[in-house]
Image (cartoon, rainbow, N blue to C red; front, side, top):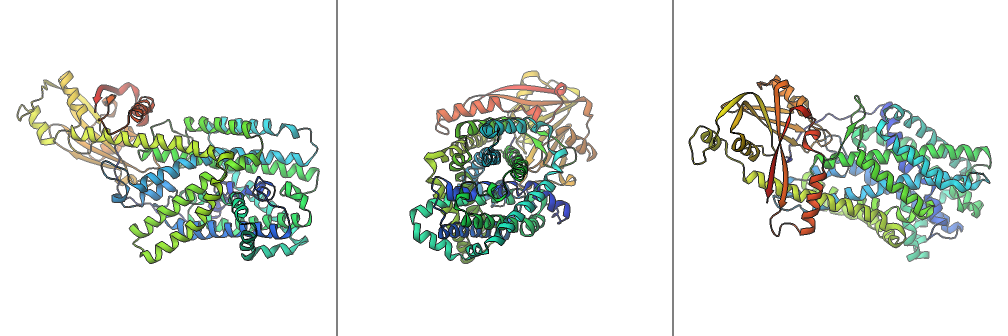
Length: 638
């Protein structure tokens, strides 16, 4: 089915205690569990520095100002203003770009390609986060002489297997506990940080950015490499924007400024204070903040639960990106199950679940230590952050009409740290950074090939559609293209078509083969709008034609799933003459013999054919009753 761009509206959400608590459980899981490994990697990682007072203050200053500039300034103050009817995320941001800059009938623009790259990289990030987060928590046992210490990897794998196996049941039941648990997590790490900060308050000097500058002056290229570990402290920043539609700007800002940001500052300062007093604590600064014994076990348990929640947020985010990409025509149709009848956005995508789960397990078994996984972490999310900044610039200048004197300096400001982080992580490519790049490349190729192939199909159907007046003249025996229609039968035939005007080839093909047509014919087109949701009152258009024909257009947002039987019930209330029990749905079952020479490379064409054959069937995607579906085989030599 083709997609069209239509402006829609949706009311803004208002802040509430429930939404603020919910944001704690979903939005901040990734960035909230970063203290488990971020400072450790700066000091004890592959490019770590000796924990001298100057180095500790320099690293802390980099972390503090990264959190301030990236999260508070860039995302909370600016990027989150670019909401698409309340929704955020890189695909929602693309929808704000003027149509002329997104694509033409033949080619995708550089903006669209860039957004596809960003979305593909998010899949890579989503596969590493559960692995490194849960593994980091399990490694807390290493601070104790515990019998389970050698079994950190099996424990991590068991937790991940259980987490992915339970996805099909949805998270509505346990999701209500995510917020309270993360509240306890942030209160705990903030309290621990404050406790150690009072023992050595001199560490607060790291709030002075001159320590960060001096760190670079002293370490030069090595200091730049340390940025690859510093970025671990802000890897969850993109989630603030992506999850804006679930909670709204105000609750996310309140949660960040009121609890998350202060807690993170306290825990990083607290760990820094501890390392200044005991440099040996740099090996595991987070778990070294509590005494040995029961407190360590309690913190490991709480950290494990927090990392599971953080992983769940990333997994759900992968589902959401897939859903949006399918609706916008960037990804093949896959099975998408709604796991809640009351909560929007509670979905389960089996294909993505098992791909992400399999890769997570492989990563844990391959790298075996979170410090090694840290080398693979960061390059994907920093790439997406840089792309978000670039597309945000396009929106500010082209959509909001900001003058270049205002939008260009802002772009350069954002890219100054985005590209610095990306460059520092690119240095880790050989040591594991290739993993998210490879995953992203696989999704990027899939999305590009699918998008291009679908465009060629859309052009094919458009070129071979008949004009309405030409068709009615033909079935009446007039005109230059007579159609051998011999009879009209009782009932209603619904022909699904991506062509919103004219008569689709599938209808002509049907008449030519059986020479019979239902007495009522509905030409049904589903359009995907640029908005995440469409108001029910404006979803359906019904237009009577002549000789028992109707044209029905259904509009869905890119966060919704089409439901054709429900749509026809709405159309019936708007004047469509139809007996839903007696409807026959006609779908095209195309076999692609070849694409136009020179339009796609032979390998690309073969891959598109593979995707086309294995994509979810239209009848299932549109929720059509199987016993009422007739598929018409079409061989398309394009």
